[in-house]
Length: 123
Figure 1 (cartoon, rainbow, N blue to C red):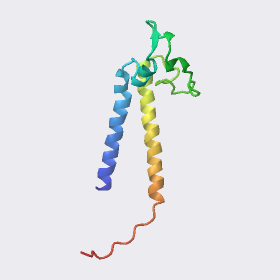
Figure 2 (spheres, helix red, strand yellow):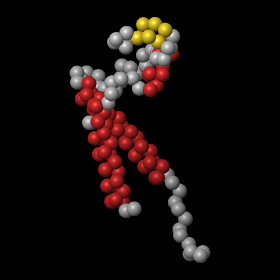
Figure 3 (cartoon, one colour):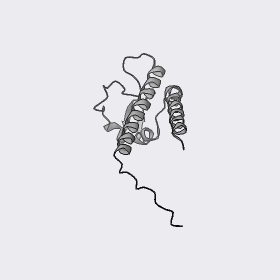
Figure 4 (cartoon, rainbow, N blue to C red):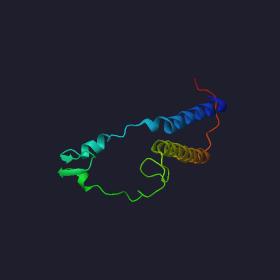
């Protein structure tokens, strides 16, 4: 694969990821996911979702140490629009992941030992 095709493939993947994170994530369901649902098994909850009785692992949940961070809770602190906050947090996550992964691959490729010179084909 040529360098130009490789860069085009990476750019296309980045654009697709940004669109999914920025646009489609705003339409994600607000209902609990499978793990949260399983953690609430055995408990009773009121109409707002607050646990009112029973016994389940979700009763022992606590705030995460980074819950006050700028991207906590699948949104951006300070934005009033949940959909916009979720989309922008998704875009930020994609860009940070792409930068970290790209930097790691760049470092690994840069420090790779030189390949031996190709010799005559034995067959």
